[in-house]
Image 1 (tube, chains in turn cyan, purple):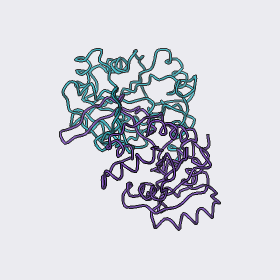
Image 2 (cartoon, helix red, strand yellow):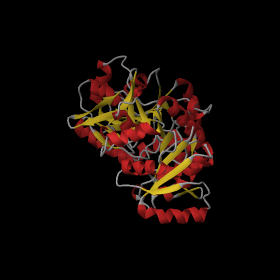
Image 3 (tube, chains in turn brown, purple):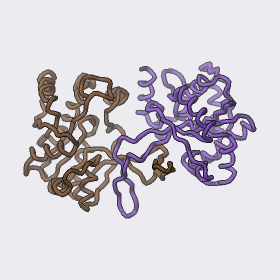
Image 4 (cartoon, helix red, strand yellow):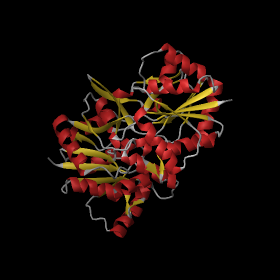
Length: 222
Length: 222
């Protein structure tokens, strides 16, 4: 199976209180995005990796690649206004390569090679595969009329990578132009494809705050 | 307004991979429960605090109190089989004291005094007050028929303390014997009382895994 990964990194440093885009911040001396690239390379060194970056961050990234000697082979393409634009730019860069495509948040650098491999394998069989985790807090739903308790046992939070047979993902974008969703699984689901769930990892955190960054350092040092 | 806090600490160390109950583990050299007691004492030094512990943990707790010189005044009562039993034991210990009662997870030691105070004040006005936070991940609901995306913008995860006018909480337990819910707000809601939501804190984490413990250390050191 040929595998491609689209790593989406569109974030700013706003919630970090940082002028540096969060995906460029260092964990144990290496940019977050470098950790992410390494994870996919460890899973499959022949994987084609496309990194989608805001146009105004490309030169800074190239400088970081040189500075840190980041040797994982990857293609850089520029992102769009919305996440869906960025992922579609990544898909265009892949062209007709890759039987299965992963879409991954650039700021989830701690994903294990095992999870990546499992996700690709399951998507090849089922058409899609996304990692999910249970919710350990009580949950409420809020409406204009008020709020009420929700049975958390039926809820799962969704992580990335989200893996799809390439044609299924491409078709979902083609059939739903302009539709904004929070993840690619939601788009694929709109096309009538059931989504196959796999177990996510507690350590596969999305780094959006300074606490997340320090937690990532702690996890990596463990 | 007289204030009481029921701090529920019924956990084992199972998910921690620890023989020590998680609420007794140390953060920066002090048991988790001691941090929790200090938070409530900081919010209101006149607050009556009831700590609900499994019967087989009471002597170990007393030893920790001596060992660490934990000086926050508190009453220890033993818990029941279910969380609801433990909270009711706490309510019995309070008796008719306290216009407003907080129920708090013992393993949420990082709650701020500000949040505690705000929660009590709002509950005095509204009958109830619970802290909630938005969900930043995509969410799915899982049923026997499959799974599907949920609009996360309407969902909130629920923290503690959960504060209630004492009579409202007592009535909810009296009217719903044997009903098991994941938090007290759900029980009060069953009695027809709307639940008043306030903003929770990102740092008010529930410590259930070794990662949570390390994150707590990181947050406390910040």
